[in-house]
Length: 228
Image (cartoon, rainbow, N blue to C red; front, side, top):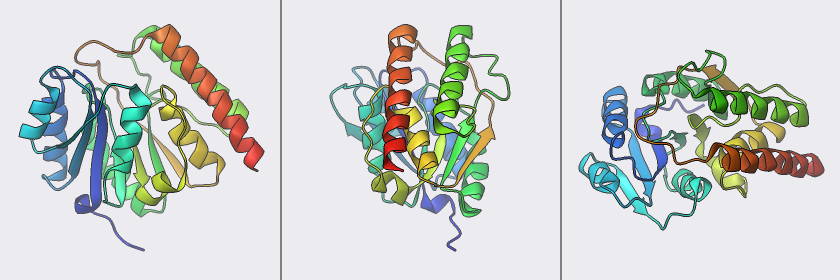
């Protein structure tokens, strides 16, 4: 089996008006991977986010703002490197876990998912935390298997998996990116991770966004059950 290194790693994200945080995120990726990982940002910003990202060596793909899932789907399908890690651009996720995620891919896992809930997610707004716990319980019930965090933005994937599955969701894409592989028998690992308070303002309406995510979880789980 191929032993992947940081030279085989792409870290990707959808970015939208995150000039306060993007520099810190990219600096962390560069420091942890010794500048060897490819970084791809799919951007719809009207602030300095793409300018900062390019100056720091990231590949920036510009698109009109169409929602979280549209940007992230374009991001995960863009790299040629065999291991793709998603993260958010708001400096909430611990890039120091990249080596552990890569080790687990090398151990044979197809998806390595950062679990923010098990460690407590004390910095997450109370409403968001309650919603994320509810989403995980709903998905676990419908899947028939326990997952702890369906909506995390930090995961590692084998590239071929990302291209073998058709992705259909927008706001609910983060849940779909875990549910479809899990229900198709891919090998999944969840890793408890710390979660930091975000830099800048959130773009997601907790009520409208939460309803869209819940609907996606039900839809995707039912579609996968019909495939069995």
